[in-house]
Amino acid sequence: MPALSTTLSSDESPPLAAWSAATPQRGYVHAGRLCPWFACAAAVLCSIGLFVGLVVAQTDPHQHEHYRIAFIHTPSLWLSVAIYFITAGTAGYGLVRRQRFLSMIASALAPTGALFAFLALWTGSLWGKPIWGAWWVWEARLTAELLVLFLFLGYVALQEGIDDTRRADRASGLLALIGAFGLPLLYFAVFRWSGMYGAAPQGLSAPGTPVIGTGILLMSLGLLAYAVAATLARLRNVILKRERNSEWVIQNFGARP
Amino acid sequence: MNWGSWSEFWAMGGDGLYVWSAYLVAIVVIFTEIAVLALTRRSILEHLGRYAKIARMERKPRNDDSRF
Image (tube, rainbow over all chains, first blue to last red; front, side, top):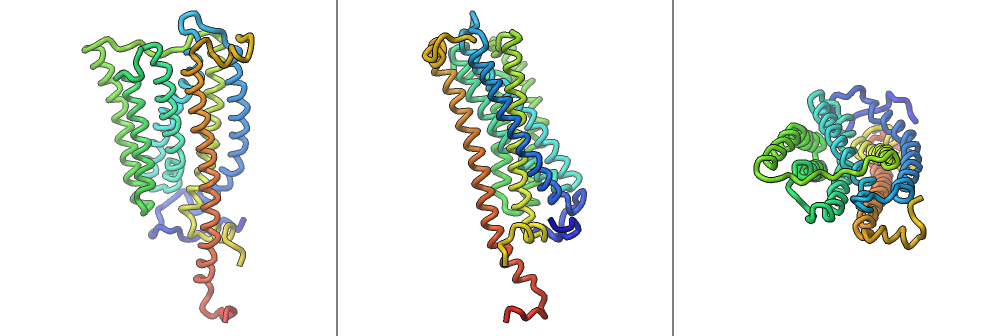
């Protein structure tokens, strides 16, 4: 690695203020160091979690085996929502304080968040079908989760669709912020609405035995570790792409003359 | 241990279609993401190699006539 002070201009001119000009370079190195640890933790925790959930946990007298979807559904659901608010927070803060490294983090988080939002909807639908008798109901949580998926997809589309990084960050950060305020509103609106005009179907919930709780906890931690690992890996890609004009990238990743 | 045999495990008490399609899709999606991340990194590095060559040539000081 060259000295940190060799970091020069980026492709944005004038460059946006950051914590320091070397933050992306440092972030790249640290992300590369941390990523394998989180990946290993994810593999171990998910393996144990799946074993507990699919093999050890007892058949439930009411839900039979359907509830086993919870081991993937519940972690995906809370992870997608958590990642959404973290994305909106980092993107929004990066926008306001003009710290482009935060926008890079947000940009790295969003696709993984979209993945978990999709998984939560897909598995929720498979779980809901035998219980509600329908693949989809317009219930507060499901509607909010659908909005989370659309917001993530919109965020990624704006990031990919706008060539100018600064404008892309501004547009997608704005979308993420609007969504972060809109989500709770929508949730409570649909909650009220379905309460007044029709019986809201009962929520999906796994039987609360200690073994099942342990399985869900293990899967949650494992998928959280996976989300961190995937985000760090993507962050490295995003940094290289955005910093391609800076000296440290050219010196370390350029073809040998 | 909840299952007596492998076939019992795969059948999931008749709910196998629901349970396994949830897990199958999860696994496919996650491994697709991993593959996409690796492929993206490779293509970025490839581009950077080409890109850096041009940048280096352009940044050569004017009085450096070693190329001629």
